Image 1 (cartoon, rainbow, N blue to C red):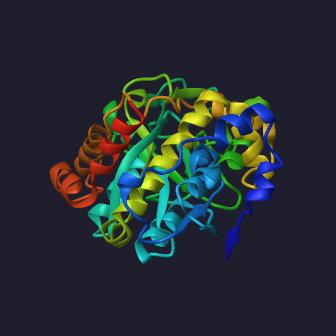
Image 2: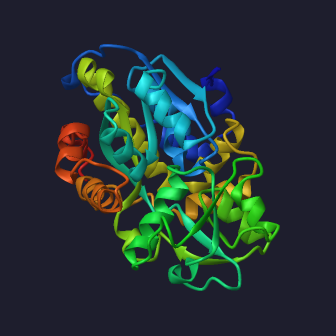
Image 3: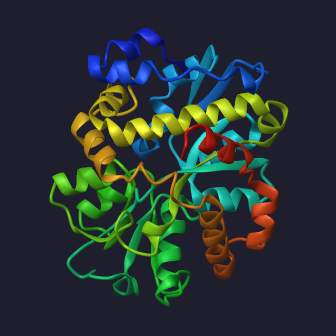
Length: 335
């Protein structure tokens, strides 16, 4: 199912101050050349840390796009499949997932890092550090899912064998966070709005916060990727999509109240308080500072060491990344 969000619906949700700053963003430069297409598709998912792609519509229209669609989805696997088969043109996704898809031969081109630090590991009273996960039940949505990959990498980082040392409990309904709240598992990884909800309910405690704890805070967790055919056939459109997404990322950092209201009024999440907390907690202001290629290299190496991917980091980068658009946009935005 595809959803088209109207400009009017978004505009009615903005404060006057937020609207002034957002809608008067500079229009596309004539030096880019004409758009090869005015259509672009993203996926609508529960992960509200992907906020830049959910609040980007007006910036895309300022770039010349007239048909902006969101395809319904609920999981990491659906994002992978949608971009690979070409039913979605671009999406913000977790870095280890992009690495895994590229290793599997998926026609993906990663274009930029977007933000740092959206995931948090929650544990019960018996879990005080990652090493305490040994022999414990850890809930994930599926093996190979984003939460499974992140926890596996964290476990391996401190010397655990994630395959043999952790008892993985897979469940999508009920979600791992609900199993954790009911005391049926010992730990789970939360992606927004799950951490906000668990904290509000006083369930468990945070063992790892990727926005503050090294080395996770030193790398992007979410990156923008596109279908290779779209990127190759539509370079002007690709650059404009990236520019709009990064401007929307700046909005998340500079005006989280307006961005959170857009998320709620656009139907991307139900709780304004959780949305606002997410936008305040997640460092959206790091895309200028951090090295996107370094993030891909880091997660590719970790997954290769675990045997989760076969390709070397160099091959992953060569086959599945293109930083030319990012470098151009950085110069234009004086990053």
